[in-house]
Image (cartoon, rainbow, N blue to C red; front, side):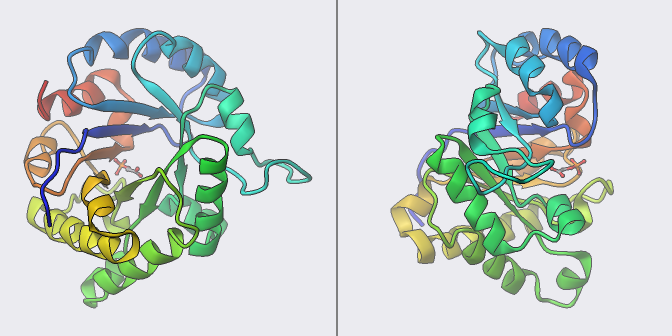
Length: 251
Ligand code: PGA
């Protein structure tokens, strides 16, 4: 596929961690640590921390995103958050279809597609997450599963979007995909994307790797041609670890 330069993207997914005072301290530290970073940085905090994080990062190039959204613009959906509310809280990004949402809330590809479309309609960029389970990889079905998740999650053809490949067996387990497995999978996903949205668009899409990324393994993964950055969970909770990952990818 045509080679094209893609701006690296680094997401820090805080998951269900931190309270406001911790978010404030983090936001005081991170911008100085990544000021020479190559690429774009986005922090994904819990909804309660969005205003604090947005205020803390205001004036820095670091963006803020939600971890999930409801596909409806408003309504009787107790406990959910809409795209408009995320924008109001300072977000420009949102995760869609993280494997923990799929696991804990039974999110389907069709729901992920609706969420991504709602995000785009409100001016947010969705970071759409897909990934196979350990059993699916061991039984040789990983690529088939990924292709299905990809086409299902992009069914509404959102634009813009970025993609995160996060093998479920690598998330929070300390087991990272080898650079070779990750590259092979990313190249497959880029080909599959080309079938869905055309080759020029697929060549310009950022495909992030996620799953136990840390300052030691990031550079060898990032050296692969189809890995355009990372979605980092555990190691993003500490600004020095997260910035070390980003800086190991060049500055
Ligand atoms: P991890 O999580 O870096 O802790 O494995 C990644 C993710 O779930 O986005």
